[in-house]
Amino acid sequence: MSQDEITVMDDSKCIFQLRGVRPFLSDKFDITKHKNYKLLEDYDKKNVFDIENYIKRKGKVKLNRNTVITRL
Image 1 (cartoon, one colour):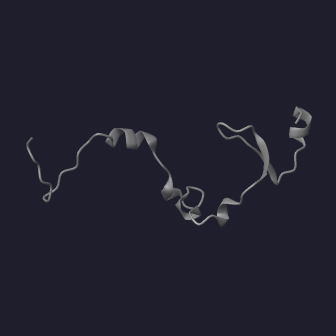
Image 2 (spheres, rainbow, N blue to C red; image 1 turned 90 degrees about the vertical axis):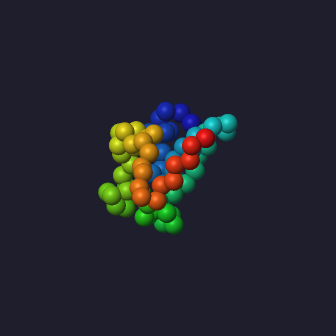
Image 3 (spheres, rainbow, N blue to C red; image 1 turned 45 degrees about the vertical axis):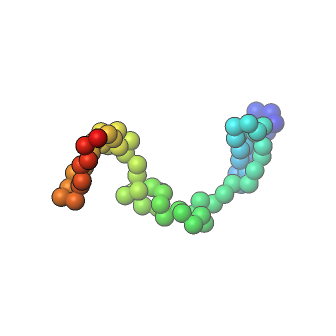
């Protein structure tokens, strides 16, 4: 496809690029019809993934009353 063809491409189509495969033209998928759509941020803002918060918590151990520590 030329650059001109891409700029006037049908809105219901997309260029799908997958590693190991040449790019190809495909129909767009309506994500609202996917069974896991409710897990996306588009569905509910509480589903946002905060990478900075994740990195801060990564590696920290949470201990509670039921935690058993075994010395090796």
